[in-house]
Amino acid sequence: MSTTPAALVTEDGRVFRGTGYGAPGKTLGEAVFCTGMTGYQETLTDPSYHRQIVVQTAPQIGNTGWNDEDDESSRIWVAGYVVRDPARVPSNWRSVRSLDAELTRQGIVGIAGVDTRTLTRHLREHGAMRAGVFSGDGLAGVDEMVADVLDSPPMAGADLAGEVSTAASYVVPASDTARYRVAALDLGIKSNTPRMMSARGMEVHVLPAMSTVEDLLAVEPDGVFLSNGPGDPATARHATELTEAVLERRIPLFGICFGNQILGRALGMGTYKLRYGHRGINIPVIDVDTRSVAITAQNHGFALEGEPGTPFDTPFGQAKVSHYCPNDGCVEGVRALDVPAFSVQYHPEAAAGPHDAAPLFDDFTRLMEAAR
Image 1 (cartoon, rainbow, N blue to C red):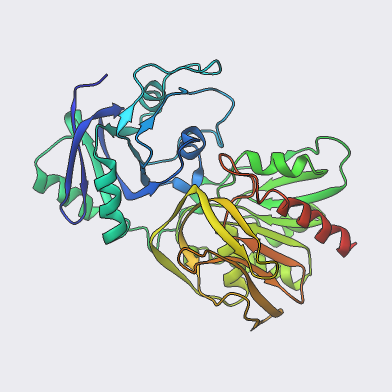
Image 2: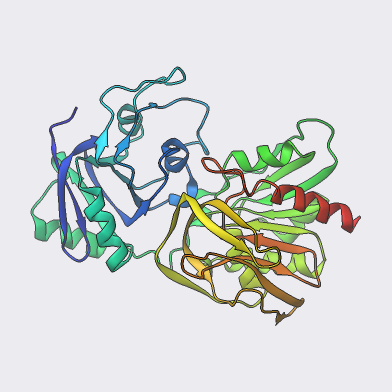
């Protein structure tokens, strides 16, 4: 285990001391906390965490090591990683290396031995904020580290989807007979999402974030999918305009997470930054129509403005907020009533997480079938 001194410094000057974990050096980003007790590999490789320093609220991390099957993208995307009690030796038959070794291999600066309970309470009370992790040669005086943090850009106004999107389109074939063709706009898509659609007979064409309407229509899609992703949805004007073009053509559309915010903005809804966001695999959501409760996986720091269940006018007919979070009333889903489009703020692909929301992919197939 490392004995290299390290520090996490927040923009309000709070300093949390610990030891180096992963690569030594300096990293800057937005400090956020994740309440998932499992699934750290999926969290680390989720592109939605781009430019964020993730604090794990579960005290013990790294017990199952790192394998080569559970990555949700081609690399680790978090800016930094904060844990309390890292495993000294991983123990799992699928493990090929330790978490510490993988963080080091990919150059991810982390810190261990931090009082993550106190840090999480600080972020809950004061909100997600800019921070830095410093270790080894990156460790400096407090004033210098705070200055570095204050010089870093905030998450509000950050246009990040293009930085994590695929550079070229690719196809994930249906696992059996292809019954539907889906154009998936990659705003930070996770690997399990096209896999879940493939299992339901969808041939998924994953397209770069800056794809044009012509690129999308060239796929001849039965449906369009808007993926999760990082950054401020107010900056994603291209994706919003592309969504408006899809709605005008009445092509069935399904969005998740960042895609939920993009659909909402295309329908005329506003977005705002949450105080500390929803990040974890245990967050309840209520369906307005059925009153059923799903336990969901989430990762978002922005949300849509709106009132659950109240229809509102859009350029494409009426729509309504279809789901909300009972913890804070946050909008968790939108459904258009006059065009075939719906979205949710959570992750039905559940990697990692509960499977309560998986049937939403079946709802998407029914929407495409009805449009034929």
